[in-house]
Amino acid sequence: MLEIAENDILQSLERDNPWWAVRGGATPTAFAHTRAYFAQFRELALNWDIRRTLILMGPRRVGKTFMLQQLVEHALKDGFPPGSILFASIDTPLYSAMPPEKLIALFEKQTGHQPSDRRIIIFDEIQYLKDWEVHLKVLTDKFPQTRFIASGSAAAALRLKSQESGAGRFTDFFLPPLTFAEFLNFMGLEDELIRSNHQGQKRRFTTTDIAALNRAFIDYLNFGGYPEAVLNAQIRQNVQRYLGRDIVDKVLLRDLPSLYGIQDIQELNRLFTTIAYHSGQEISLEGLASSSGVAKNTISRYLEYLEAAFLIVRVRRVDDSGRTFQRMRQFKAYLTNPSMRAALFAPLTEDHEAMGNMAETAIFSQWFHSDALSNIHYARWKSGRQDREIDLVRVDPATLRPAWAYEIKWSDRFVDHPGELKGLIEFANKNPRHLVSVGASTRSKTAETMVDGVMIRHFPCALHCYQIGRNVIEGRPA
Image (cartoon, rainbow, N blue to C red; front, side):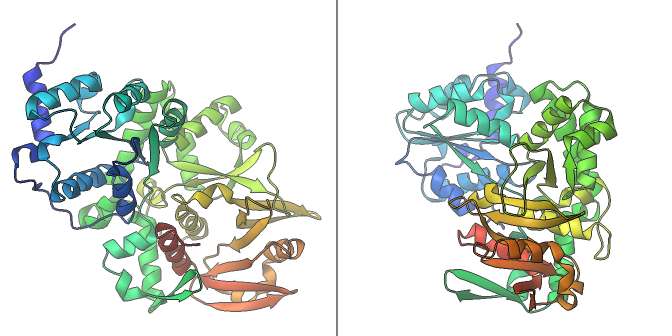
């Protein structure tokens, strides 16, 4: 079998690791913006007291490689030897068929460092390495002074293998799309539009200009989940061309087929397009199978693949007492990043018919890095002959009872007509001892109303989206 010349690989490694030539300990790259999750990531990545490999997971284009490069920059600024850091992207053709042990040997040869010394080795897009978890497990044990860090875009698949093969050796870290709080910060609008105050353990926020905040919220829905789009005006002007193609071509047409051996790529593409267009609506395997003509088992696998790529997340249904169903016959499927809809179809305006569902998608996406995500559901039940539904219900994992219930609306109507929130009122009256908060979002108004003994908080949707993202990032109750 023909082999790639070692000299070509070494030259590629030199290009990918420019700090090897900068013996002063500084990288020539400068970063103007930092993800809010970077401090948590850096603390885990550079903690030498725990001998574990760190697995950075998340969808494409949310800044994983960017954050890894920032980690290198910070390590160098802290005095870490430049020749003791290796960065290798496994989807590079020169590296893709090469075992990581050989890359490390070439790294040692090129820099002359001692493997017994502390060093940082980063493998970007690790999912392209066959049996990556086995390789990393062996390397973690073999080199106790090496901090191995790997990243990948197939989050669920990576997590499964990490848990199966890396128990006690791997730590997972999820990087979600930009939160609305991060978006405002990147755009230089946070200090201008947001004010905060503390109420006990919680931190509450107000806005100085709800109209301006809503305009920023629309921008967030259209392109704000992607750091690249936020920082590049040309991409913002044509998200369908730059980001839509990246989602469809690279994830659906390349990543997933190569990882799972999918034969009918167009079936998968149609399923994702349907879910993206109807993000936040209840669906069922039976319904999808009937409308598409594809077998339920195949659709079930496709849904798992889309979740593995961190493109969608499925949310379980609960009944009017907050109990989950044993079988997930119906569920909601959300885009993990509301901006994907605009990237695939067209940008939203504030009066677009899809604004309600996409506002709900945006609210839900703020929870993706929170441990509370697994306890958040939607409620749907029969009330006489009518269906009742609530968009978001958090079930307390200790009591298995609903702790709070919110309806996500993009309208001020329900402040003046709160009695129309029939599902919310009925749910609250059925769970009076457990619910600590009942609310409904608005487009711009803040108020409290009382209906049938139920106190309903009304709050602007955009402000609520900001508050959840900021509190989750900072580890406070959202």
